[in-house]
Length: 221
Image 1 (cartoon, rainbow, N blue to C red):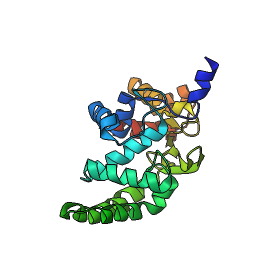
Image 2: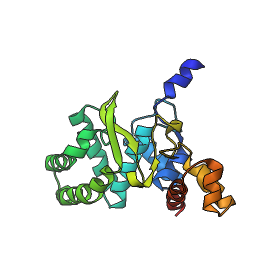
Image 3: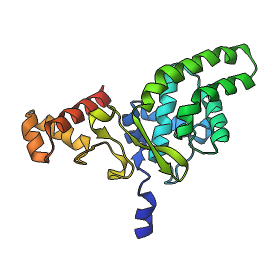
Image 4: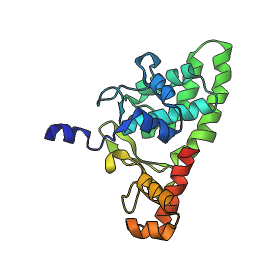
């Protein structure tokens, strides 16, 4: 039992419904993206139906691409190209994708034949510069077993206090300063609309209550 507990420390642990909620997509879509047939996301070391932090971040990138109309087969080829170039099973999570991502898309499309994929080249570069570049501001990188990769995710950016850190609370969203889960803060606020009372109950500053409410309401939306 002790070794099982140690094996998940620092990995982050998310069910498919939790992951779907955090990236704001329906659970069936997450299941499709995770399926072996999709060839998008590396299988979880924790078993079917349980995601790690890095898998969650890979799903986040896939979702950002899809929302901008990038086709799944283009994302799949980009992931494969980046995986080979960066020697990793989590190509979108490594820091090198941040610095070399535009090149990955350009090289990928250059190797393909067909008019449609050539047109996708400009689309891929646009998505990387306009959509992914701002997303990188929400990420902290550090040394991990796969090299320099994502270690923390700040969904409201760093000034927003909310963080997902696989080293803390199994990667669930928390207030960075106090460590209190945002879900707990939000549910307390739903039960009692007085922000100051909630802050006193949980021993957190008002800023933590406001940030948790903003984050959770964004997920609900």
